[in-house]
Image (tube, rainbow, N blue to C red):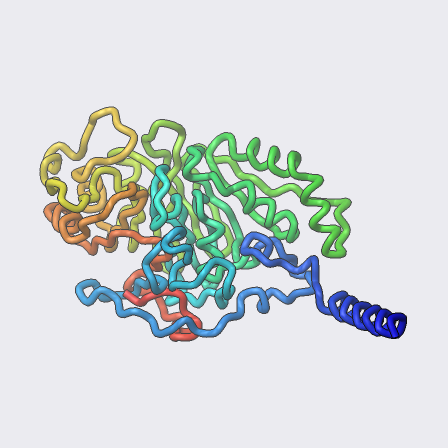
Length: 398
């Protein structure tokens, strides 16, 4: 009797083990980071990595703003109650592919500053054109925000770096690793030191990169190094359909601002800076200027600065690393930009009404206080072929 019972138990245990062996997939990704590293040749199709059901209806935009800007529901950040934006736990349901609101726009991936802020990732912006992206700067939290937005590595054509302060290139190395594992033809543009950083990353992690490539059944013998273009500022060049212009701007280290033009529309990313005539020239007539907010953002309960104080003199001439409120307002007004997006915002509660009012004393265009996963399009940008819907969009129309 005892021998019969033991035989039955043994047969049952072997059956369970066999079923587990059939259903367990050890090599499949189970984190956002692994999902970014999946190859186009992986056993898991890329679209399956991002599928999810709708998380609910979109929130309405600010009724005072109007236009074509949008942000993901929730408005929160990396750490709020352990949830990502939209109230979803990290890694719970990967988002759908990003659906642009226009053919040409900028997505504020991270709107924060060096200090950790659970509501604002480190500085990063994505220039979106016809569903493709150029990622400008890669601060802390960039990978998580890209994942939440539904922007995959295959959609990114280039990395641009404004300067080599840690808060702006902190996640360059893991993102470059992800591109190398995928074998993507990535372009890298940045200030002096960019090639050294890219080459070091590829060399130092060569064994890890080869391991991941081979694990996906591909040949890791010929891992191509990224194509790096170092710039000083003042260069102009084409990248696909985009015309790119650059200018060196004043900061504590070598920093370059970028202008992207497409079909008569333009978006400028300032990088960190103080008052700069070169930025004014670069951003002249631009549809959107994404700017280092410096001291222009008013904290809740703080005294409101004036945008007029330095209007006559042109800007602050003090030896600073970031602009004053007057600098921001004057540069935007003199450049004649249509939309001004404030970013690089320190950890504090922002008084948006007071901030906008102060800048409007000098600058007469639209002022937008940046937030993570805010998408801003120019007023004249053509609508995307796949308009935002409740089930596919991660952002709020503004």
